[in-house]
Amino acid sequence: MAPASVRPASVSRILAFSCVDGPGSRLVIFFQGCNMDCPGCHNPQTIGQCNQCGDCVTHCPNGALSLEHGLGQRKRRRCDRRLCQGCDLCLPHCPRSANPNAQSFEVSELVERIALHAPLLDGVTFSGGEATLQRQFLARMCQELDRDPRTAQLGRLIDSNGLLAAGHWPTLLERVDGVMLDIKALDGSIHRRLTGRSNAMVLESARLLARAGKLIELRWLVVEGVNDGDAEVEALVRLWHSLPSPPPLRLNRFRHHGVSARGRALGETGPSTMEALHHRLALAGVSLLPLVTL
Ligand code: SF4
Ligand code: SF4
Ligand code: SF4
Image (cartoon, rainbow, N blue to C red; front, top):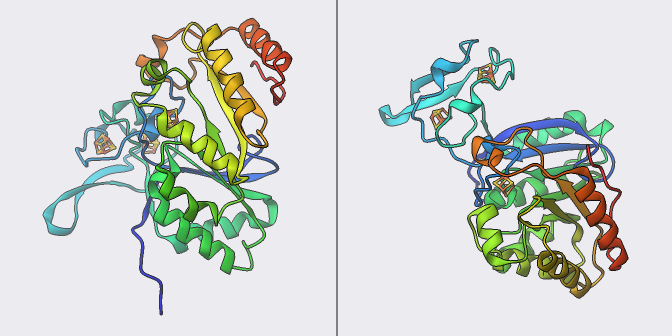
């Protein structure tokens, strides 16, 4: 029996080669849409979903964007890939933090795109936005990647904010090698300030993934003066030691590059703060990835 069809995925961007989104050389798919709303997001155009308002159309200097009649006379935003130069000048003009040049992909189209680059890749990373929001598509695509001899050997990782109910993880975990998980804050109110959401589900995800042997990296975006206080650091150390086979922790420095005006209201984190935090966590027995303070 043919498998049931899944809805196409909304994809913000595809990076054909990256060496910082997991081990080795990787193709990265940035899915469109996120269930958090972080002021400090470095890809704020991946947060929202397009509502076809058309506000972006006149801001494309290359005439790539248009609002056209779709099915049922409802107008739809369209991006002509032949004209789009990838200049990103349209991004700040979307009132919904969506990406005017996001594209819709069927499973077979994305598998073909991955297969094209497969000879040069160690794996694929599913990022976002929040990739797990499009989990039915993701699960089906992983099945098809397994079936295709051109892509079956590629590793598969999810880059996630962890805001996914426990019951949804097993189907995904059967099909990927592991998850790189962002922890934004341990204190609930600090987490809400940094993401707009509670962290209860995120912490549950961290424990679930570690128990399943699928948590391969933890990330901590350090926002100076917000989540680098003593109580936060001590709670992070406790969490890390409580996990079975805890993965290495990557400290990321909050910078203003790419963030929205809301994010620029938060102060940038200084290199000396990062070094002090790295040293303190190492002394507390936490296994850390090398610090990059650029
Ligand atoms: S979870 Fe990640 S992608 Fe989503 S808003 Fe926060 S920083 Fe951006
Ligand atoms: S990224 Fe593409 S759609 Fe957006 S302004 Fe540039 S050319 Fe136009
Ligand atoms: S991308 Fe944003 S501005 Fe453009 S049509 Fe969609 S919601 Fe409107």
